Length: 157
Image 1 (tube, rainbow, N blue to C red):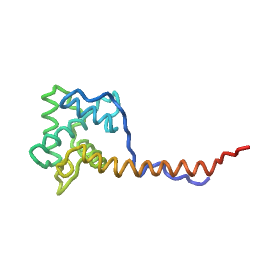
Image 2: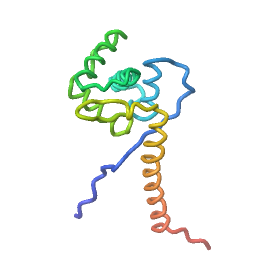
Image 3: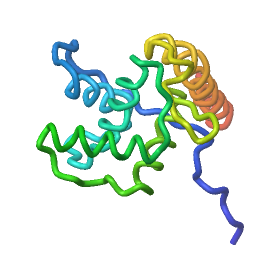
Image 4: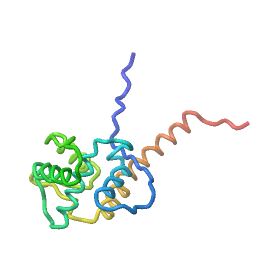
């Protein structure tokens, strides 16, 4: 039997629509993470929220952080918020940083992380996600639609 191609996406994006943002601080970051698929609804493992939150706070001072600094700041944030110390292993913090980087929200330079170019998230999202990632994903989905239309032609009588 012939081996089928791997079902490994070249890129993927999850988008969810929630009510208008009325919350503040961590809850706002959490709802954004849910909206762009960095967090799943009902998921209690939400350290990605704190990782992004820490980097947003660092952006205010134009600070770049090493992954261990991110980890330490996440631990402080979770302690202050009386949240359980789950998902704070260095390897998991690096994994969450990679996920944020894959979405182009953050970048790294010499092992230091920051919000991309210290820019506004709305600008980054518009340029990198809407302008590039979403466009390329939508274009490929349309390629599949056209190919299916050719493959399964509708015959009118």
